[in-house]
Length: 160
Image (cartoon, rainbow, N blue to C red; front, side, top):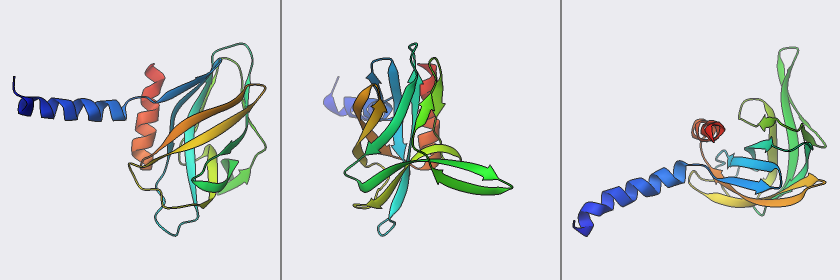
């Protein structure tokens, strides 16, 4: 077999690996597919999403996050109030034992990044540190994907 005939196969495997899970483990806490939506130059904020699963008997409480991609990160919740979408900061995100908190664009919890240090383009990635009460910190790599691709990839993690 010639090297040239292997190149398409290698490229396909690389693409498949890049669209597969990127999960992280902190004790009984599993973080699945952290992703952020793109932010063009000049846009000062963006949102990041992930799944937090707790396999053990103790709940997980996310109390903060930080990244060199922005000056600050806040925990937020979006909800409908009298037909109007509202976003508010929350002090923590509680994930009961044996459950998964699924963060997706369009509503619910997310990590709001303020004063971005640069544009977030599709295909980029950046580090983020998540802080859990009682469990400590875990560093994850956040992939920049459009909302639909990020959602689809993250939803695929529930088969693991």
